[in-house]
Image (spheres, rainbow, N blue to C red):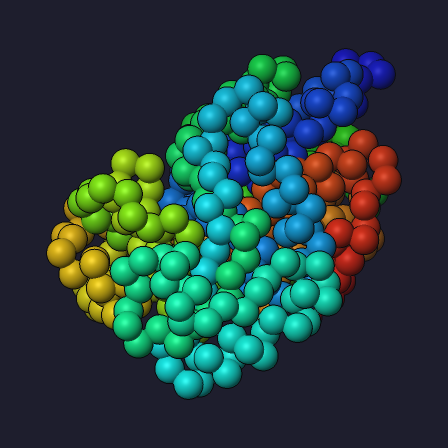
Length: 375
Ligand SMILES: Cc1cc2nc3c(=O)[nH]c(=O)nc-3n(C[C@H](O)[C@H](O)[C@H](O)COP(=O)(O)OP(=O)(O)OC[C@H]3O[C@@H](n4cnc5c(N)ncnc54)[C@H](O)[C@@H]3O)c2cc1C
């Protein structure tokens, strides 16, 4: 290691690792940052993502982080000097039945108390926000600051911005092991056997973080799950907000090119998690389309042009694990985003950089998301 220069090795070139690397270099140009990505940047959950940028409906423990992050998105293209495809289109979660409508009414107060600007809208207002919604729609909850970006463009934007700041991104080279000496991580062993000394190893390896950490005795209860997406053919623009539905798994958006992107947590099969292999499930395609068409009938005229999945790491409480590990210095973890990490990327990266550089880590944003809470 160059004397005097701090070195950080980031394991994983998904959005979380790239954002952390970018923020470290932006805060301190003397620190050397290497990102090890065993495949290519954004290879797993990040490029597969539905790219919804949402604070509505989040767990209370994530709200502060999400609000902070949503504050960054409108200016992110300028910050990164690259295009993420972000639009603040609003989010609308609708109710198609009495149970959904009761849930909609019940969720608004606590969110508003935490500063999330959601509002209950009746059926007429919901139809004004999203013409074409089912006539069954009873109303819903609208969040004007929710929005959407484009997953692949966003990965490219963070990678480009990180490289511009001098981050070294090594694609096709994985982290094989962490080297621990005297209760401190001192190096990362690359898949070609090279040993990269470091002051901090930041493990942001998505669903593959747990096996790497287990080798040094850190047990993270992460479970990889395949999440499926559908893309339809295009029609002229008619749907502005990202649409969800109470009681039914759905995230629906119309992209700039007029195609519809449909997700919502429908499962894919994962025949070989270790090598990031997934298969689209016909049942999920059918179920996903059925829900989407019930909520938004114009989709009946659209056909599916593409389907894919991404493997995402889930924790037992569906909240990410961030920060240091008690008893092992020189190690930071950021994993387990449980299907909703995309929106958080700007702020999570900033928090991780602060932790890595010994700056104020803005704990008020991620209190309750540390590793210590997990069994
Ligand atoms: C289908 C789908 C839809 C989603 N929709 C949304 C949404 O609308 N809104 C939202 O907020 N979130 C959404 N998410 C979640 C969000 O995309 C993820 O939380 C986020 O992208 C996680 O980023 P990550 O960097 O932690 O993980 P990943 O993107 O999985 O990156 C981890 C990287 O680490 C690499 N890696 C693993 N092990 C090693 C190793 N040993 N050495 C080197 N590299 C390694 C992998 O190759 C991978 O590239 C969605 C996720 C999926 C899958």
